[in-house]
Length: 245
Image (cartoon, rainbow, N blue to C red; front, side, top):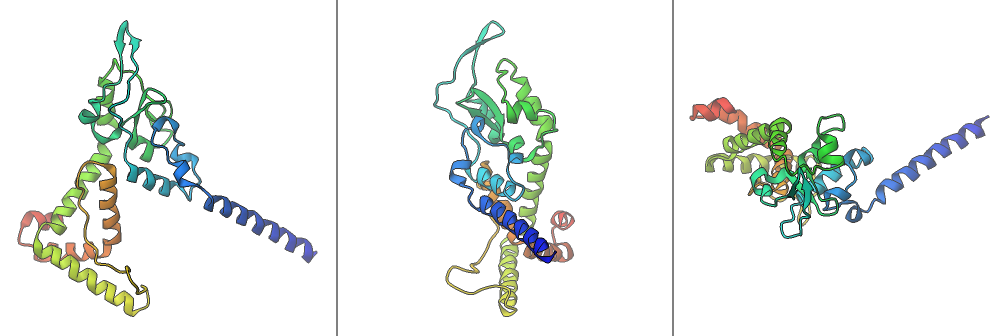
């Protein structure tokens, strides 16, 4: 009987190895599509790959072509087409697919679920109601309020923690001590290019890649930021910063 159990265990191990091999063999250069009409939805990826897919798309930013030929269609007895100036009006969430001649939502593609209202229109099928510009405005107000509030909170955090030269020096000193302690305990390796001095990355513009770098630096320096906030809360002279901390 033992040989049957062993063979079954080997089969399970073999299946797991084959599955992991398939995950490792994913070609990201082929997977990531600039045109939103050609993309695979985030939920279609293996759970182990979804966060990496999001990071890849965040680094690339939204698809906003401005010099292509936007086809004209008769909608409501009038010629209509996508207006590239809408990219400036509605910001970095709006995308356009040349292959589908439809508009998409970059934010919804990255973070919203299939069950959410508007997902089919702005993620799966695309939107081409170019005679109803008000739909774009209502989509921003109704669907992106949470993301906007989150980014505003991040901006406040950056102002409190890194708003003065004294606090920036504090960040550097605390981070330096934490790295020294981790090296002494063997938690970090030494070598060329390792354990370089870190600093908080502020978003340089409205591109998603800029926000991604900011969020990444916050995650990497989370413990340091918490320590600085404790000091600001206890000893801060500015009552507004003290309350926010």
